[in-house]
Image 1 (tube, rainbow, N blue to C red):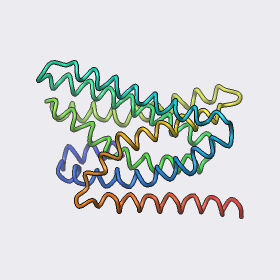
Image 2: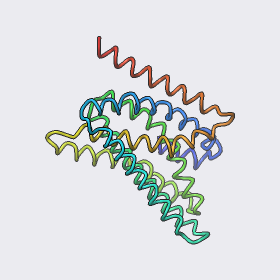
Image 3: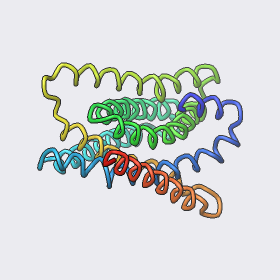
Amino acid sequence: MSTFGIFAMASFSGWAQRNSAYCAAFAVGLLTVGVMFHLIPEAASIASSALSWVLAGFVAMVLIGIAVQTAVARQPEGAALTFGYVSIIGLAAHSFLDGAVYAASFWEEAFTGWLATGGLLFHEFPEGVIAYALLAQAGLPRGRAILLAFIAAALTTVAGTISAQSLFSLASAPPLAAMLGTAAGALIYVLIFHLGPHATRTPKKRGYDVAMLGVMVGTAALLFEHFGGAH
């Protein structure tokens, strides 16, 4: 999805910019349901410390965001190239953590993994669009911008998943409450600071309708899993 966003932006920038907001809006609805009504309750049912891990995941993402903003703010006026590189490093770190969220979600159960992944996949398209736009605006040649955006937005997610999966497999009793709680906190950050603002860019506030569609799909998935499991 990130790669699709990158090449769509490189080839059809107008279309990509118009439609990435719709993907973000759908992800807002789907992830909100998944986080609030599945990930957090599931983590809380495993351990009472789950909410502390939710806060820890959120704070960790906030600190990364502050670090990137601070580094960018210190750059001299007109240093577009430095801005682009610093921003893309922050985006790469964020994508790496996205991969860890995938691994943590699937480790608990397949349904949890698919619910989180479904929302995050729609988040990856605008992430690819943003990655390429940052580098293109920094003045990098088209080919180099595509390559670096692919590494930062796509490969880092895969690397995060593989790294987290390997780490979890070494533990005889993986800390599921910590994993799910941290994943939920990270997703809350993504919802508030990335997806939400991006979703508001849809024309005539159509993002609200698309977000409601995401809520409906997420709710239907939860009901299907609940009654299917009960059956």
